[in-house]
Image 1 (spheres, rainbow, N blue to C red):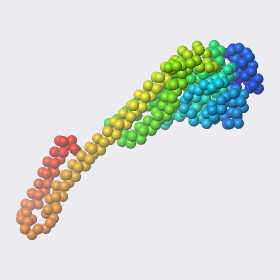
Image 2: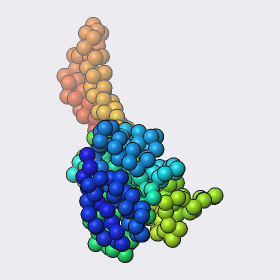
Image 3: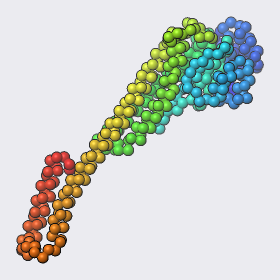
Length: 331
């Protein structure tokens, strides 16, 4: 469905067009004018009319409807097509959720398609409508502001992930021993970082292309040449995000490995303690087994002090074994 549609002239919102064809024609005829249409999870019939009016490529239209795309940038004859994945992080449940934004930039028009509950487009439109000088740059300003808002929020999410990882790390290595079931928590946290990387990692190449940083970067159509420094700033921020995310992923793997090693050491300690107690229990069992065989010729059975002597021997042996195992740290 179309959630917002407006014509912008000279950095100001002019009107909501009644007919898309007339609005596009008037925007192309006027100077510093463009049409911006925003759609949310459109169906194929709803999007077909927009695609026909703006001559959007059918492959890009298909990608916009499927909404399971990696971040990318594609150039078609009549438009520039970009996919972004905004993310949200819920610290209480330690979950990362991602949506999708598809942006079509063409001659005097912008078409944005949103999937998910992300509100980036609404915030960007509201921001631009209060920044007339920026909005005068037309579709270029819209694409830059959307990319900048998405990447800046990546930085916030990366910071939240880093803070929660520090808390998780402290819980795992707490001396209380309550981290025995933390392996699943660490693994789930690693899955959230992987979800975050799916949004940020593939975006590096498209943003670098917008910034003109590729090995052979021809000028992209429908964008102002003066926008490259601004996209370079977005690229720098995205590089910081990717570096932080990679560090978080390595740290989570290290924490998981250390936790498993810690659990292995604890299990070894437990096995040593169990073995020590079993050895102490084996001594009286062995002696009792010998005297329980009822041999006819066993002199100790007729000795008056045999029982106290045997009990004393057991006590001495048990004390010696206990002190031996205690000295070696087995108990």
